[in-house]
Image 1 (spheres, helix red, strand yellow):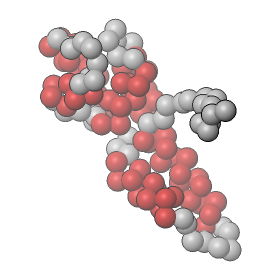
Image 2: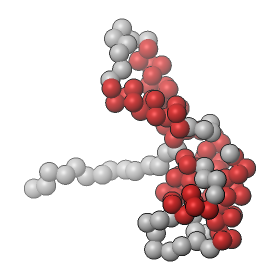
Image 3: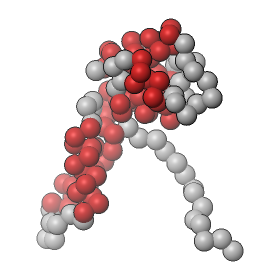
Image 4: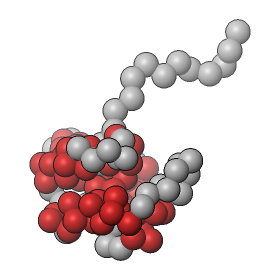
Length: 118
């Protein structure tokens, strides 16, 4: 017998998408009599308001463009869309855990796509 719960599904979201979802929850809570938000929800709302630079549609467009590149997979595309890296060092930080390194042309291709949205 195991005490761990089984993961049924997993879906990636950008910070901008999370902001959209959390703002809907926040608006719903504002209509209730007990208007107090739990600490965790308040912190999550504060975080997404501080770090969501694009709107949800733009962030998804950016993810789709990044996924067209050969060395960008889904988790990395979402991380790049959240971070909006400005130089090669910031892109390399996203790929630090990978078993491969990107060459200069691949880094520049990523930065060119991100620059269109930043």
